[in-house]
Image (cartoon, rainbow, N blue to C red):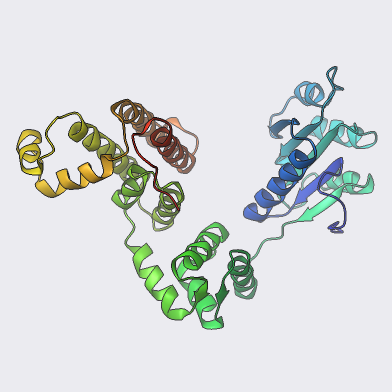
Amino acid sequence: MPAAAAVPPTSRLRVVHGEEELLRSRAVSAVRSAVLDRHPDAELHELAAQGLPVGQLADVLAPSLFGGHRLVVVVGVHEAAGALADALTAYAKDPDPDITLVLVHGGGKRNEALVKAFTTAGAAVDECPKISSAGDRMAFVRNEVRTFGGRITADAVSALVEAVGNDLRALSAAAGQLVSDFGGSIDADAVARFHRGQAEVTGFTVAERVLVGDRQGSLETLRWALQRGVAHVLIADAIADGVRTAARVSSLSSTNPGELARTLKMPPWKVKKAQSQSRGWSIDGLQQAMRVTAELNADVKGAAASADYALERAVRRIVAIRAETGRGRVAGR
């Protein structure tokens, strides 16, 4: 299948094809950014192909009475039913110039004819093949480090791939953090020190970053905790405990750790940590955060389709609440 790097990202038809989820996500993000740069008021639609009614697709692709550009991303077209694949194939023969339509195909033989129909119609193609060999993963790491503005030695690349494993998101996150932590110059010793620190990530480490409003740090430690196998429930409980303790400390007028420890029946060290973490929070913000943690508790126990996503969404929401309602400057990197 031909790649089409020379075709502009805003081509009316585009196919993102391949097994590597991170690369697919980045390709779609690049198209979205390019479309919004050219059409800041564009409507954005993302549809899952599996189970998608043909009528719903037709509504989204129908000519608009009000003008304006639309970006329509249909995800998982390898799982599209025959009728939907036929409708997309028919559309490719006469695409609307005011619509950028992106098909995301996870690779394999299913609905390969649909991908071929789009490429025959002139669609741009972003190939996202599975990165399966150690050499390809090391090349990926080197490129990520360069993208973040750093340099990495050959032995450090090998050490990082060996330490982190095959997950590209984890490798990318590690590359970015290493560049940030070690001034852009990374050797094997830096990787060893970094990996030792990340191996100690727990639910309470995530909670600490969330409570101080460190959005990037919260998400990084969350992903590392999940990568290391920390249970979803334990992370959710740690975040809830941190928010609840900060709220209890903030609700009392005293600032004396010993007095608070006696009143709240907590060890003094926990009171001091809660006092530190509650700085920058308002009572209203902590109450909102407690409601988020209550929802999260249900989500990680089965209410949500993806416990990983539920945790990340809750982290983002709590950090945003602190920024919107807090009494002080939000920490961040």
